[in-house]
Image (cartoon, rainbow, N blue to C red; front, top):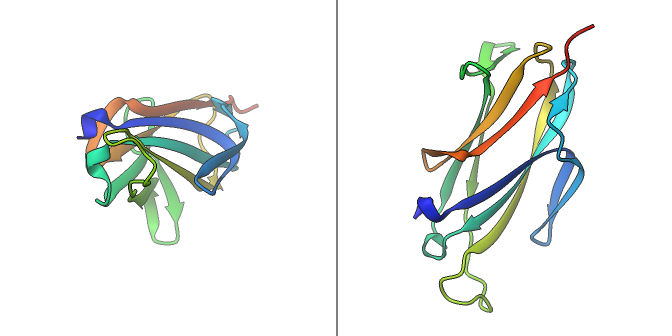
Length: 144
């Protein structure tokens, strides 16, 4: 039941998951330099009970303010900025039946430049489904 899936998304300077907990440094920003800058996506999932034991496919797409995929130059030509991951949770024995299952994920994004003075958003798709609240936006500072 993906309609019951809750996801909290946060942009951070650094994030890591240890022992099932999400540790975030420099988190909660919404503006960054246009110059190449590292970023992390800190994600906290409330996975519905009935999805335990099933692989969940995740895809994050970086889009501009017009909804177009952002592309980065690579040795193989321009490529869209897409991040893919798989999440699979198990039911902890002490969890009340029917309760959502916590899952944390920290995704490091290699530094790359973006045009200054623009808005961007990371849009999450879970098993190919998107929701309005599975989006996190940020802007770049205008170039001097």
